[in-house]
Length: 464
Image 1 (cartoon, helix red, strand yellow):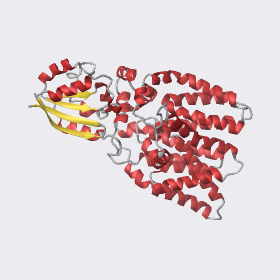
Image 2: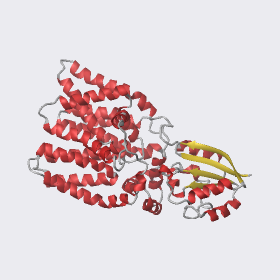
Image 3: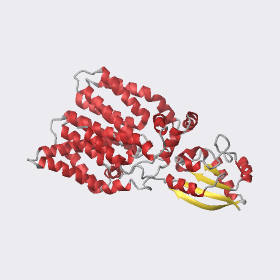
């Protein structure tokens, strides 16, 4: 039974996987995983250390190739595993039909395809969250705390933390689950598992604390954030209303199923509420950081559909769930189509690569502004191979002192500027801006053309 949602999710998420261009976050993943370990170490020293584990996991994948199909497949497989896990949890907590319906609902939600078709770790986090919840459920089914299961639970949580620190908001939900299901009987065993996970993830937390600028672009969420999150999940208002209706039935309908309620309700509510509340002081909320909560939403909606079907007579018991799932898929279709467009991502790096591939000439120089963020634009590396990056950056591809840059300009004929401003335009040093100003004010050069590709800007300067 879990195979059916997994295969459907696999089919849905593979559909159109090569349509959207890589954008800057994916560019980082591809370039970091495909480059040398020495380059990766230098990059992580100042940037993105919290994603180091994912980049290492991705290295064997990028060794096979750097096309969208290859590099996005781990996320596709993770989404399929999450759907299968939802089916297993639904069967264990309520019924086989509930698990099947929940897994199929998960498969057709646009937000699942959006992050299954992305070279980032959010789909992997969802699969890990389902696994952690499953192990916790197996432990709570025992009258006495099973140390082996809680040790395994701690190990899964630690892996989750290394994939993405904010995934550990799930721990708070699981704490509520333990108290609702078993009271204090399992609290010590659960706490030991959590403690081990926190200890194992602590080095990553320390690195993240030193790189807080990485999330400086986040802002406190507004009052519309629940609606915004719901629309991102379902894609359209009608699809969201149908999903919420089934979820309400799934919570209010079953009576006396404390185990089921203890698992799904905290998972659905607590991480979201905690992230939004903390974000009033220190912004940590983004919908993709809570993607794993969509698994709980699909599960509770699946239970609602199963509960409804159980009370229908004859052939309608089968027909109504089929129709409901088909309606949800049709209502979500516009959003599914939109996220597969080439320009559906915040940046269109494929279009940037096309411009360079068609207009760049051998020996053209390139200036990255700032130099350390070149990895955010170079996923399609073939387009940059013919460009000379060392002349205007030095062998380490860092920002040259402005005086040295002015001297280096003397021998150049054509210069491409790839500008990738950091969040809030908060440059680490004033050098990149000074270098760009020096080029713009150099009377030996004029800007021949410029292009915008989302948050990445490209310009060509030629000698006058």
